[in-house]
Structures are given as structure tokens and as C-alpha cells.
Image (cartoon, rainbow, N blue to C red; front, side, top):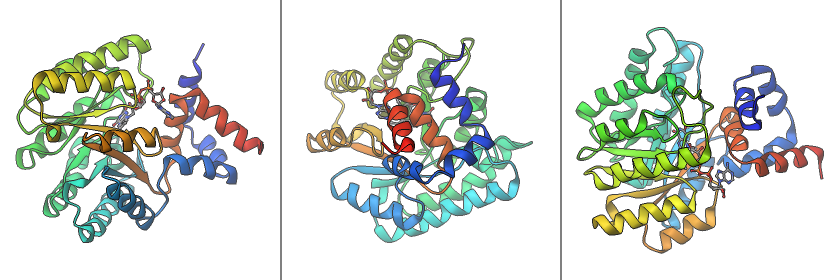
Length: 309
Ligand code: FDA
């Protein structure tokens, strides 16, 4: 039988359910907890607030799994417009961007080449305003393609960031390969439903794998980005930083906008480099469903909002 998590993640890919969920006005209130708004101006308002609190940001123009080239080009143009707007804020690396290659046509025929062609100008525009781009990681079948695009981009822009998911069995080896000078790697648990052949299934195994990958990245010469809200794993990262003598500016903790915001502020005030992942845009359905899948309490809250209680 499918778990609740698997059902929600399957629902994230259903267009009919997307229409149903996004059409309900009450949904908006719950979505607002996780999404900064629909426009660039909405996103910039959040950027100003968070950076004012000492929290850096990585902005995500929402969208994924495009089905034609025109849509993929619109994703590129949207991120270019965002970078244009960010230029005026002169925040440098305090405001970077994250992109999903499936929004840049990765799933289309010839998708790896298309995604590379469309994401390259985004990376160039980011470099021009003194900031960086991180390639989000999606379903396991796309990891090889995403890492291939990363390798190409890193030839001229070595600070382009990657994401590794500890749920995937291959990630420890990927972490070793990416633990090189200048390499920016965000480690997360993984938000997708993956089969046992490629992924650890239990929470304990995923957490243990996270700790192992963390060991590789924190003891290596790169720039680890510890993407988790899990206090135990954050403690392990901080301990490793102390033991290896890592300077506070040589790694960072990342959390999602709207999740444990008080902890984000507390860590920043305590001198840790903290970055919030800030999604914005109209295409929030897939992102929102993954946040519901991560935590039963979010689903209960959502259902109560729909029932108007
Ligand atoms: P875990 O799920 O065990 O949660 C630990 C605690 O955090 C919970 O007890 C709760 O307090 C809080 N929490 C976690 N999720 C919550 C939620 N949805 N709502 C409310 N509270 C919550 N994944 C991916 O596959 N590819 C990617 O590119 C990214 N990118 C990314 C960037 C950043 C900055 C973060 C923080 C996360 C991602 N993720 C991701 C998502 C990641 O894979 C994972 O699904 C979530 O971070 C949840 O896992 P935790 O590590 O937080 O632990």
C-alpha cells in the first residue's frame, strides 16, 4: 500500500488535482506560509526583510517539468528578469538563485543540452552581478543529467552550486567527487519518492546517510551548504565545523522559507551563515505538495483550512 507521503508526491504530478487544489481560495492562505508571493516584487520584499535580519537568500522562480521549448525559454527569461531586479539591490552573494533544470527543458528530447543552453545565460547574468546559481536536484533519473550540466557550467563558473540528496544511495560517492576546492554543494535529505534500488527507504537510513555525506563535505575543501531543518543534523554539522576548524564563513546552513523561521534567526544571531530558500511565482503546486508530504501536520492544517475550521 502507498504511504501518505507517496500519495501526496504522486498527486504532485497530477494535472487534474493541480486544477482542483489551486482553484480553492482557502489553499492560498496555507501556500503563503511557504511561498513568498507571485511576483518579483513580492519576492524582493521578502529578500529585503530576510537580508535585513542577517539571513541570506536563494530565490527560486517556481516551475518544473515543462513540456515544450517555449515554456523552457520562459523559465530562463523569468530568472533573467529576477537577476535584473536583484542587481539594483546590490546584495552580491547574499541573494543567489536556485533553478530546477526540469523548468529549463531537461525532460524534453535532447533535454540535457537544451537545459545547459538555457541555464548558461542565467549563470553568466548571476556572475555579472556578483552572485551564484545553484542547480536544485529533482528525481533520481535526472541526477546524471544535472551533474553533467553542472560539470559544464563549472568549467567557467566554478562556484555554480549543486544539490545532493542523502536518500540516494549514490550520493556519498557524488559527495566525494564534488568535495573539491571552490565547490558549493547543498546537502538535503531528498523530497521525492524513489524506489529501493536507488534510495534508502527509512528515515533512520536517510539520516545516517546524511551524516556520512556531511562528513565527506565538511572535512573536504569545498563550501558545504547544510540544507536541513533537522536539529540533530545541524548539531552534527556544527560539531564537524568545530573539529575541523572550519571558519564560519566557509560553510552555511540553509532552510526553506517559512519553516523554523525563529531557528533561522537564532542561528544567524549566533554567528552562523544562514540562507533561506525563497520560492515565488504562480506555479507553486508541486513545491507545495512536497512540503505537505514532508510533514503530516502540514496536511492536517491544510485540510482544516479547506474545511474552514
Ligand atoms: P525532516 O523532514 O526530518 O524535518 C526535520 C524537522 O524540520 C521537522 O521535525 C520539522 O520541525 C521541520 N520540517 C521539515 N519539513 C517541514 C515542513 N515541510 N513543514 C514544516 N516543518 C518542517 N529536496 C530535493 O529533493 N532537492 C532539492 O534541490 C532540495 N532543495 C532544498 C533546499 C533547502 C534549502 C532545503 C532546506 C531543503 C531542500 N530540499 C530539497 C528538501 C529536502 O530534501 C527535505 O525534503 C526537507 O528539507 C525536509 O527534510 P529535513 O532535512 O528538514 O528533515
